[in-house]
Length: 367
Image 1 (cartoon, helix red, strand yellow):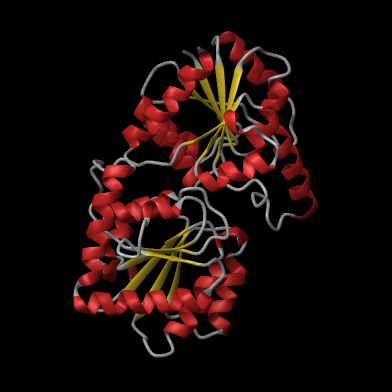
Image 2 (tube, rainbow, N blue to C red):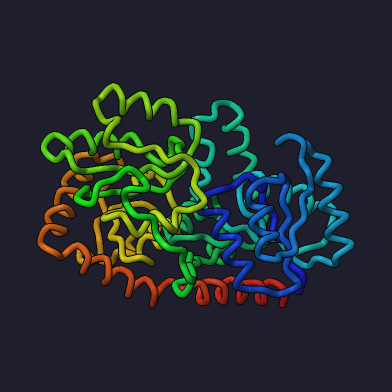
């Protein structure tokens, strides 16, 4: 089996970790990672001793990489290409016209929201991506909701498999920071949100909730790990609403595994997700979660004893849930919830199960 994974290469969030975790678990010499740009993902792949190649796309509309990808496929006798992300999908559709390979797509996010706030260029890429999805031999949806979205695009159900994310729960994690290293006090109630500062992640909802919570609780601190086009706007909002002392913008971080353990709570306010790895990362260190009702989060939080699922764009419910979590911490029950979430997640969403499920789809396609 020879499989080439394709991605734009500029991903730094859950998509990057999804791909790298999968390839690291498969750990077979016949798997290659092809990237369009030489960014952080390429460096991480080399650190993991993966077969990684950069096709050096000069711009998002540089079509010369098609020839490079085709040459790589022929030289290495690739039988299957597995694409991740809209740009990779669009270029794979062109590549497939020139070489005989099977083509699999993992749908990491709602294709309708991938280019939210990107104007005309975003609309063009959204249309091209939808067209590419219909041409693939098979698709992996990271939640049942995403499978339903693909079916609404007139993609036959038999061409779609649902496979939820998984992570390595046995990984040896680095020593956590102490709170003072991040400017926090021991008696602070610390909330962490790990997400790109992009419109689809709904950070404004989190800040609105912080306004409500901090009306009477001044010891609540929100750590925002991530960067993106919304940063200046969000920082301005915190200043204008008196939140500058309570919201810490950490920027893009490669050390979130050291930050999670010092948090009391993890939140996610996205408008759209698949099956968020950041929630699994929080669960791995027994940090309870509040998440909007997106993607497959109901599989991670089957009932309210495991965490909170709230409506999208509902800052009131988010504030209420944060206050409930604070009361649970005071009574000693919040840590119990985190431990329960960790135990359940470890049984249900291991990296081994995830990789085996994907590998079985490869076998089915190639046989």
